[in-house]
Structure formats: structure tokens, C-alpha cells
Image (cartoon, rainbow over all chains, first blue to last red; front, side, top):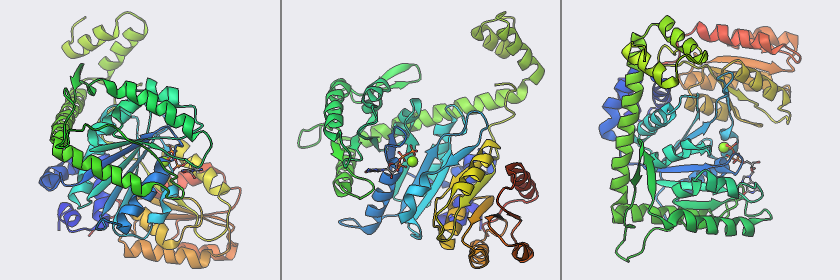
Length: 338
Length: 146
Ligand SMILES: Nc1nc2c(ncn2[C@@H]2O[C@H](COP(=O)(O)OP(=O)(O)OP(=O)(O)O)[C@@H](O)[C@H]2O)c(=O)[nH]1
Ligand SMILES: [Mg+2]
């Protein structure tokens, strides 16, 4: 059996190995993705993002538990990708999200993979997309992707996800930060976790105010240079309503409010289907994926053609302020003097 | 940014750091985890009171190169063989297992014989562990799923 066949047959070690190949950007990984691609597109992808320590991992734990235990749902297979930052100094990382997911241990219907950001600018999105596709092809119906909220990465996750949860918690003083980062704009569902803590009402009020600001305009994405309007006219479902991100209070450590959250996710999933938004998002995601890949591939290809000494010489000229970054790029690409 | 990177491919050493058993101290495990991180490795930290089954499952899902165990309770002669056996059953016989904690000298040869790569007492310099991990990993080709 090839690695791909083993993955499709449900071999967990094969899945783990393939995730590594994709994560490391190895040719075998890309080749496998080619083969797996026809098997993808079935899973519902949920992004979970928010400031450090808001309880994202605890929430993933509860969500996965809930989906696995059924309720009104047939138990679904749940894949988790938990991203933590790499140290910019050493390139190493401590990936600690599993500590909060121990309730999922021993369940063969769950597969958790930790992942470091590895400082690959832009590349993280492509790598994560590849890993999500592997899990999708391997038959996980629900894929939860946890990312630390820090700027561009949430937007990339929002593109990757069908449903994006933005997690806030009272008492972090991040209400202001949230607006600055524009994080509310990517939220399909807002979760106030740690609702057992004081200050919930204040957080909810702040969110409600900011949410009106964030969603009063058509939703738009910064998309290669120009702003692309996501829903020029808000999508209408047959009842004539538009999607307004609900604000839900939960206590992830106890599981309070999880049933309501799962319900909201299900409603959003239906909204995406009925409104045609799912297809629109999928097209945009695919285009972004292609653009990212194209850029990464072009850069990688070009790098093999450039001589390290020449690269260094241009860098040095830049450092000495003899050439500007734009001139430097020109010199590297055209070999000219800019 | 100094050199242009040769390519986007990157091989990171992935280490699962786990504390099997019931003792409640993970200070040592955390020190080692941080040291390995500072040496550029990716450390999957799993927390206290892990069963051998949980540790093997984590090593599998994370496609770990290395499993670092910290045992202070004295139960290592029961826990370690079980973990090694589970790794083998999962097809991960190539995973390098290291052990730290309070391990009596007379147990060390038997642990090595079972397949543990290195045993470290309290106060071991982390540089030594880092060196050993690097060396052990560079000597193996990785596990195969078949
Ligand atoms: N009181 C209370 N504490 C919580 C709740 N949810 C999570 N916590 C605690 O908050 C801390 C952080 O939880 P995590 O789930 O690790 O948060 P995270 O957002 O995944 O953290 P990072 O991945 O480090 O960004 C832990 O100590 C949790 O036990 C909650 O609902 N109530
Ligand atoms: Mg987390």
C-alpha cells in the first residue's frame, strides 16, 4: 500500500507521517496532496482564534467532546490542528495545547495534531491548508483549527474556515485590541469564554458595540492589494434574514453553553449552504491558496537560481543605504543596478 | 535574515515531553522542555498524569521523533516497558525514548536493554540531553507506517 492508500484506509500512523511531509513542504507531501485532492471538500472547517489564554484549547476540547458524544448529532470524526508560535530567536517551540485536550485521549474518532508557526511568512496558511486537506481526505467530517490571534494569521484562518469563532474572555483588557486588529470582522460567531469570571457584562457590552461597527459595512477582505467585497448585498436566506454574528457565553472548563454554541455553528453551516456563501467562500479560498502557492513556488524556484554571494552583496548595499529595498529587489531580479 | 534559505523544506526534531504516573511535579519536565525549545526543537508538552496509552497516542498523532519521559514516583520499571511496547505496537519502534527523574543506578542497564536511549538523573546539564537527542535522531531514518 502507498502512503496515500494507507491514509485513505484509515491508518493513523500513515496520516501522522503524511501530515509531517506536508508540514515540511517535502515533494512527497505535495505529490500525496495531488492524489488526495479529489477526496477533499467534504469536511466542515471551523477556525478558533483569539488572544492568548482566552481558552481556545479548552473550547476545542469541549466542542470535540460534544460532537463525539452525539446529542442530536451522529458522532462525527473530529480532526484538530492546534497552532502555537515558534520562537523567533531559536526556531523552536513549545506546543502546549494538548494539555487542555486530555478528555479526547483514547478516542479513535479524534485526531489532534500540534503545529508550530515556524516563522514562514504567508507559508503558514499554505501549510495549514495542506494539512487540513489531508485530514479532510482521511475522513474527518469536522476539522477544528486553533490559532493564536495575532494579526494576519486570523484572516488567513478565516479564509480557510467555513465558520470562524473568535474567542474573547473578560478581564483581559483586549476589547480595544480586538477592534484594532479587526478581529471582530472575521467572526462568524463570537464566544465570550470564562463566563464564570467577573466582568462578563462589560465584555459583552463592548463586543456588542464594536460588532455593530464591524458589521455595519459590507464584509470585505484585503485581497492581493485591493479590497474585495465579500458580500456586497448581505446574503438573504429564505426567511429573508442576514447573518449577524451571535455572541455566546460559555465556560469551556465546565462545558456550559457548548450545546448552544454547537447549535449556532450548525445554523451558520445551514446559512452558508442556503445563501450560497459557502460556495463563494470556497472559491475565494481556492484562489488565495493558488496565489499563495504560486508566490511560494516562484520565490523558491528563483532562490535556487540566485548566487548567495550576490544576494549578500545586495543586502550589504541595502544596509549601507546605497540602495533602497525596491532597488535591491530590482537588482536581484533583473541583475541591473536599479 | 542572513542567508537566503535554501528551500522551504525544513526538518524539525519533534519531541513529546510527558509525565507518566501519578506524582505531581513537572518542574523538571518543564525545564527540559524549554531547553529543547531553545535548542530549536518543537516540543509537544502534554502535562501531568499521562497514562502510557495517552503518551503513545500523542507520539503517534504528532509523528514524534523523540519521547522524553519524566518519572519521579519510582514506577518507571512498570511504566517505561509498557510505553515502549505500545510504541512498537503502533509501528513507532524508531521513536527514541529518553527518561529523566529519580532512577536508581541498578535499574539503568535494564532500561537501556529495553530500548531506552538515555537515562538522566536530577541535575543533569540540559546541554548533555540536547546533544544526545540530536545524535539519536540523526542516526535514524524515521518510522514507516507499513
Ligand atoms: N475560569 C475559567 N478558566 C478557564 C475557562 N476556559 C479556560 N480557562 C483557563 O484559562 C487558561 C487558558 O486556557 P487555554 O484553553 O489553554 O487557552 P488558549 O486560548 O488555548 O491559550 P493559548 O493556546 O496559550 O493561547 C487555562 O488555565 C484554563 O484552565 C473558563 O471557562 N473559565
Ligand atoms: Mg491553546
